[in-house]
Amino acid sequence: MSQTSQKTETAKLSLPDGRSVDLPVFVGSEHEPGVDVTELRSQSGYIALDPGLRNTGSCISAITYIDGEKGILRYRGVPIEQLAEHSTFVETAMLLIYGELPTQERLLRFRGLLTQHEMIHEGLRNHYDGFPANAPPMAILSAMINAVSCYHPDVLQMEDESTFESAAARLMSKVRTIAAASYKTSIGQPIIYPRPEYNYVRNFLHMMFSRPYKEYDAPAEVIRALQLFLILHADHEQNCSTSTVRMVASSRANLFASCAAGVCALWGWRHGGANTAVIQMLERIHNEKIPMPEFLDRVRKKQQKMMGFGHAVYKNYDPRAEILKAAAERVMNVLKISDPLLDIARQLEEVALRDSYFVERKLYPNVDFYSGIILRAIGLPVAMFPVMFAIGRMPGWIAHFREQHNDPDDRIFRPRQIYTGPAERPYVPIEQRA
Image (cartoon, rainbow, N blue to C red; front, top):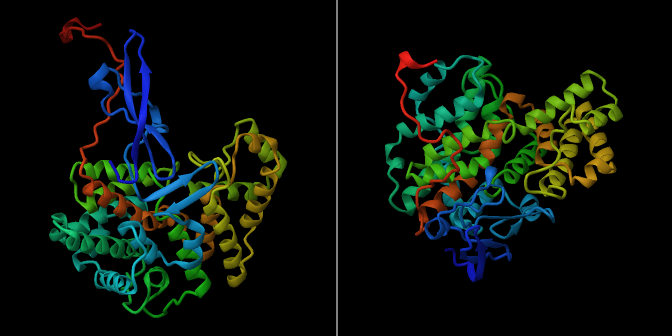
């Protein structure tokens, strides 16, 4: 058990056969109580059933704290609002991975590793030719992360902190190079090499939008907006993709394979594809000129999903959404963009927050509601939105991989089930089957 989690008392579970089982109760550093059911089956023959795992703690973690009722998000104890205002993506990544904000010396060292590993092996360029032009970017990203590891067999056998640091820096650095190269290949343009003098975000934008004959140098406000996007997506506790990374890591798969699995989990529209769904919803309202009262009426009648509202954890305003809303407006002003989708988003939020249907159900804007508008303003195509999410979430995945591997009580994840299929029956020869 983590040093920040302590046993306080026991809970008694009464079973239908008259027996009872005493289960330990543990409390986290933010006073979250949990009942430990680790020994439930061995003591009683029962298992805990929780479809969707919404009420199950799969691990004890010291990385991210969320209070969904109050709209609180903290990385290693630091409020997300403070990181958004003062930090950079690389510094935030180091906070998540190593537990503390880095010293100047450590930050410079890690940035040096990111620069050192920003190129991808030339042999990988041929891999891109094997994908059709319309291949989903997330499929390419997952495949290429695994392919990259084949060119660096040393990272597959991490034995100490120095080899882990090298693997983490390689993955964080190369994922943006892979993503930009995927985009360039999909639109038939030559792959752009990274520039070592650029910082993390500026370098990515350079690789995305520069051409051999024309350098793209992003405005400071665009760099800051994308920096915010990445910081706010860097971790979010035990979501679908992070839990996937931890599950794969528990098998002792390597860091690259574990994070490639996280990309696949993030791919779905319920997770990393949610901001794409928001843009598609706003475009439909705009293109079909659907009046706002009519659209909201469809939502109330469950004829239409309200994408970007509500969250599995937050029952209050997602703190990330507030930050991104302000960032979206700043970017629009700097770039002198008038996007009707932003206007529609504002109207939807304003009306919904006064509507009893949404208020009673605690449906507030989440991070996906405004993140897609920022990416769209920067010039990123919708197909790249989940890829951007994956780049942002990479530090969190790396942090959870490390925590999983360093846990002295680590065991391979092996959930149980309640079987509901046929009871035992004999094999029927094919000639006797009806």
